[in-house]
Amino acid sequence: MSYLSLIGVELKKIRRSKIFLILLIPIIMMWIPGIINVDMNFDLRGIPITPENNFFIQGFMGMVWFMIPASLVICTVLLNQTERSNKGILKMLSLPVSTTKLCLAKFTVLLILAAVQMILSIGAYYICAAIVTHTQDYNFILGPLYVCKNVCNIYAAAVPMAAVYWAVSTVIQSPIFSVGIGLASIVPSVLMINTKIWFAYPMSYPFYLIMVAYGRAAEGVYETQIAWLPWLPVAIGITILALTVSCVRFGASERR
Amino acid sequence: MSLFIESKKLKRTGYLPAYLAGGFLAAAFPVVNMLVRPENFTSLSGNPIDILMSANWQMIAMLNILISICGACMMYHTEYADNAMQKMSVLPIRQGKMFFGKFIISALVLSAMVVIEMVAFIGCAKYWFPNYAFDLIETLKITGFQIVVTLPTVMLMLVIASACKNMWVSLGIGVILVFTLSILPQDNAVLSLFPFASPYQILFEAMENSRAALFLIVCGIETVVFGIAELIYLKARRCFE
Image (cartoon, rainbow over all chains, first blue to last red; front, side, top):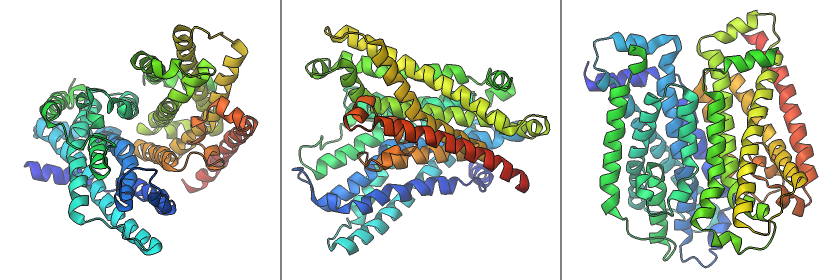
């Protein structure tokens, strides 16, 4: 089976899983307080930022630090558990399909789901920005290039995190540990971002990028330059390591 | 009897170790915080426990909620994964009794987690604050309050987990609720009474606003109401299955 048709099969498997709703609801939720408290964007408390930038960054902040990692964890549970019931994974593993390919196809589906979430969030942002522009008589809509660039950056930064979560969920069989580790790792990312070794902690990458975007929009809040050098090699290394581990360990407990 | 069966079911799922690990991870927050920047806290005036709690409780409460969500999902996942639920419903056992067995276990492990966290707070206070005097009644009061304000969340999460056959759906709903209530304004008195928002409350802050009794009463009522709702739901579900 070719890699593409395997991805097609994996997407078919999750068709009736309601994952789309689970991805959509938090994105709607995240903008409701933004619309209600829109006038707070004009009260900047001395931070030199324009209201439209403030609206964009404050809206995305909550999603980036909590909802992206959490939905990745939920998606890994989905990808693993749909096949555990009724031993579907055993049948998949007995087919003449390379397990590495199968594992990577599932990881690609995880990335596709994350991409869907990003596209939805861009859509939700524009709808909400249009609403508040209308109600407040002030232009809150930012250029699509700026918004898409930031969201794409966040998405790219979420890839190492996705790889780590995927590795955790394939290595650890008991869902309570894989989910527990995934969710618990979100909490300290706010602390890690302020330390010198933030680049070794994949869960803080998207949050770091939104903070840099914040720093660029508001002088002096945070750094304005992305520190590429220790970060990029470490991130690529973590991604490759996590994917290798997950490919090696995929289906290991079933093959036993 | 049902408690014994329920705890036996959880034996090989890693339920208890997960809670203990969560408790120790949460307990590490104040310790690490004090190790990294002790001067930020020792210079403050006031009760050491209050200082430590206001600095760390937000994260610890979030961790408690997340671990409770995982636990609730796991408890019902073991039932639904291999259709054990159908077998259970054939046995002469009340579904409600099973639910409350699960709730009591969750409440007990949650209490264990909060106790571990309180021990960490007391240890930090003893080590870094020389003028700290240990007060048993005060400590018990704080521990009890923090457990009671978290109970509605645990109960509601079990109700959600019992309603959803698929683990990712219940997990998704739980995570969405955590997210929603964490982005809503925290200082709103009504919103902070909701499950998933009430665990972030700290006893001494609630006492300053003289809301401590209100929290205890409302959270108690919420817990009971969700329990009754589950019983009604179980009765109603039988008509549709």
